[in-house]
Image 1 (cartoon, rainbow, N blue to C red):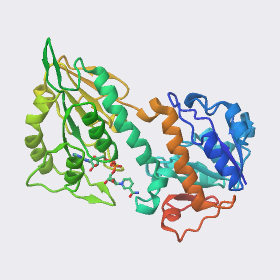
Image 2: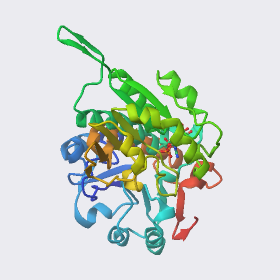
Image 3: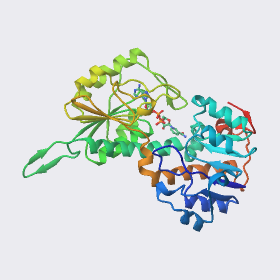
Image 4: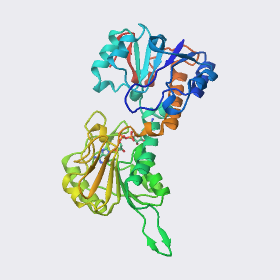
Amino acid sequence: MKISVLKEIRSGENRVSITPNVAAQLIKMGYAVQVETQAGQGAHFTDEMYREAGAQVASGQEAFEADCCVQIHPPTLEQCGRLKQGSVWISQLYHLSNAETVEALAKQGVSAVSLDAIPRISRAQSMDVLSSQANLAGYRAVIEGAGHLDRIFPLLMTAAGTVTPAKVLIFGAGVAGLQAIATAKRLGAVVEATDVRPETKEQVESLGGKFIEVKGAEVGSEGGYAKEASEEYRKAQREAVNKSLAQADLVITTALVPGKKAPLLIDEEQLGLMKVGSVVLDMAAEQGGNTAKTAANEVVNTGTVRIVGAVNLPSTMSTNASELFARNIWELLKLLGPKGELDFNTEDEIVDGCLIVQNGNKRK
Ligand SMILES: NC(=O)c1ccc[n+]([C@@H]2O[C@H](COP(=O)([O-])OP(=O)(O)OC[C@H]3O[C@@H](n4cnc5c(N)ncnc54)[C@H](O)[C@@H]3O)[C@@H](O)[C@H]2O)c1
């Protein structure tokens, strides 16, 4: 079975879904691998490296002439139209908000696997692209936030005086938030964090962060994800965080609720409480933002606070992000086709969760 690694066409995307190392592993499993020319360029994997790994390099329509095409982002409608009937498409699909794409894949008579629909169970952890990429993004959020700050992170005692450590406040202690806490701590900041899921308290504390508890209001979670917070919770959260917000140098917001617009965590009034020169790095910018003033891919200056609307942070670490993404795909293919042929056993919870279209029939 031939797998084709497509070059990402989304603007600003530097990652590639399969690296030369993983291509070599797939070839060992019995697959033939082809790579669209310069697919790995943005992540510093050259066509030559893929050839050395045993893959072929293809261009134009030839790149789509495969039994399975792999990409990071959902296909465009034009890409859907190029796929071979009976072939398999693997990428992130966000099928619940991409009905037109799913329809086009079904019309083309292909099977489609959505990487973001892999269930969040222990057995699927190694295949979870959302986690692998969020982990890197959490690290990068701190580095970018530090770059926008006009002060340093660690305590510094010098002959010219003492510099106190920066205060970092993190909203959302999921995969990205926890990595952000760890990174900010390593850089010497004093870190506080809050989350709607009370079980994150222990995780925050184990990384050396202080957990801000929101008392008297429960939100809870479903399948590991947060549910939408109520107005009552939002009010209690404001009361719990406002003191820390007013003292923070850097705030990182990571809060998402699957299938919904990102929750508003910092409104205009709260932005007004923040210190002059402080920075908010909003990781939820693409989903509408966690602050009242976030604009995706822009730095908004309120006069006192700079709000960085971070977009696609994993692409800024394209080499490592591609390595982890490719590793996730490899693990998934070990399940879907360990012997060089894909076979969908829909009785398996993971396959059932991520197989969105099967031979032209929509399953979700
Ligand atoms: N295979 C697996 O078992 C697996 C894989 C990945 C993640 N998980 C778990 O799923 C959970 C969520 O992970 P994620 O990082 O993808 O989450 P996410 O990206 O959906 O959300 C980020 C964080 O924001 C929090 N949040 C949402 N609304 C909020 C609000 N109003 N105020 C404050 N915080 C808010 C969420 O609780 C979450 O911790 C974690 O517990 C993670 O460990 C499990």
